[in-house]
Image 1 (cartoon, rainbow, N blue to C red):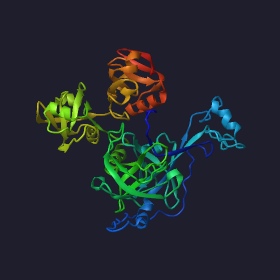
Image 2 (spheres, rainbow, N blue to C red):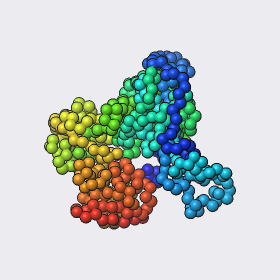
Image 3 (cartoon, rainbow, N blue to C red):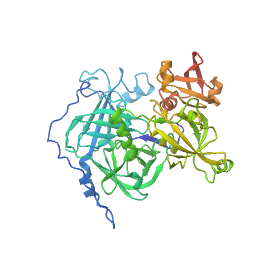
Image 4 (cartoon, rainbow, N blue to C red):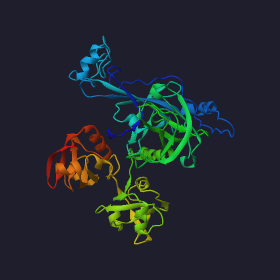
Length: 490
């Protein structure tokens, strides 16, 4: 995330540092009351006059909402501010708790574990009576243990079936039967202005209920191309991540995921992943343990009125193809730079940002029909999609994204190429300007690492850039050689 943005966008998984807790892998599973009777949550009809009765709704849906806590074992060291940091002596002198350090009088490792732990909290909801739970991927990322606590106080150690960084959806499994499961609604049928209710554990306060309305639909956020978010004014805070967003019929229509904030707390704008997007991801995670996405192999840009007129289009819709990757599905199907993709399998492409989601929802090998505008007339193009591989972000860096800081545009290295080179991933540079050009980067270079941190995908590369400051070194593959390129951003 760029440090110059005035508005911060972040996930809602609250974390704290701790040196306490038991040894790794020994979170206990409480055996208390017998499993709740399996029963689908009955729909709750919304009132036509006056305010809705949220109490009845919460009684019906509350048992299917869970609290999630995680533990991540950190590498050796204190895990917080080091004794060499200028703030260390200041904080110690005035008795301020130091992140990563135990309170005075306590042993650094009271239970003998091998190092500090990071603990996190989040929310989730049960989607099947046999123990499948949906939450956000960022809630369980890098966790060594994941514990799910039900509304009846029973706790289970969960298995992470799979997670998908692109949509921020994760699927968990607990060893239980006969659980109360949510009813899945239709986010497409929801309307702006409708009442919605969120349940979760903000700051660890379990079973917290907040309410509001849908403020907007299909909201596109910076660097997010796979999720058309529901925007609401429901109060959401750290710890709400992964919790359900209900309509007044008691159906889940979204997963609470992110907020916009200048202060770090809720400021009236929150975002939820539409449940239809989440359920498509859930199906693949349950079947494969990961999401397999189709890949078209084009670099696209948005349309405006001037471009539409120059191409002879009646309106500024569709995705303009700026580049076609060699040997890609698009190349094999005959797509050309300058084509405007208007429809995918009959579904209109209103904006260019919709195309990655539409293609990404389809599996590799799927045959699709594109409606393409070329030479001032529409034509049909049949395409068999390729595979996007396993990188964890959108498959291209466009102008106006990282180009503003580093000065490159590029795409993720194809999985087959990465395997052939013996690397986890990389960024294929397509054009350079600014700091990248001054540093000597060239078109065709492949960025493999930043400050010795391997590049595995686009979104991870963005994070490495955000954390790198104004001076860093890139490991670059150029032809048959690998070189380090120092970069300085003025």
